[in-house]
Length: 75
Image 1: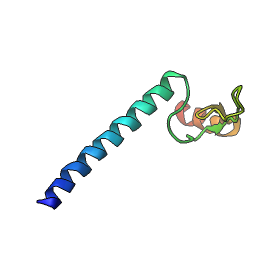
Image 2: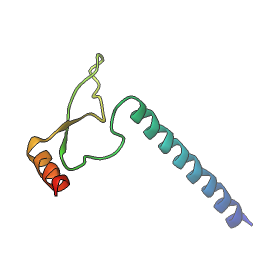
Image 3: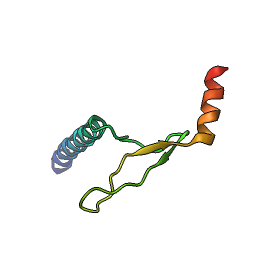
């Protein structure tokens, strides 16, 4: 019985983590930042806010890699 109860509680915790992660990603995207990793053709742009904290999720175009992406889409 204890094992069954632990399994139910563990499932509930996993659903909460999944929900919070998804909501956090949506919030980051609403602010115009990237919620995921670095994609080919982009590089991380390091900036700091007024408090000196890093602003995460900012990207800049990597010109050398972007040329490859343009070449692929032209084909």
